[in-house]
Length: 87
Image (cartoon, rainbow, N blue to C red; front, side, top):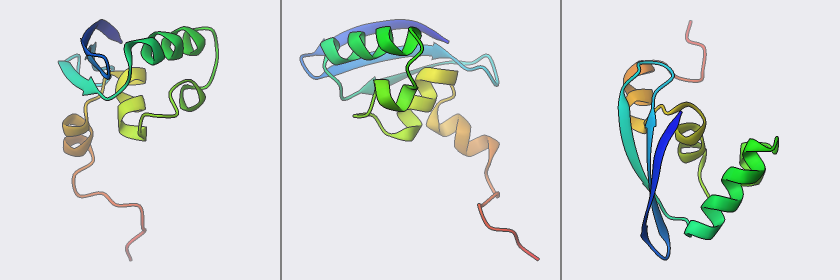
């Protein structure tokens, strides 16, 4: 859950969120204009898919906006797992 968004510059927004998985609060700086962030947040909250609302962000950044799970928390949760089945 996003708890705060602050403009850092004309091309950067700092987002603070609480993780749905752990309840930990973390912050991520996104390379996005404040205008694009506000627009994306509005259309996403109105029902647009997050990948369509924020096409300029990568999957990890969108996951952070959606769930509050940071990249480091994601890595810690799934450390040792990979996408392929091992026999």
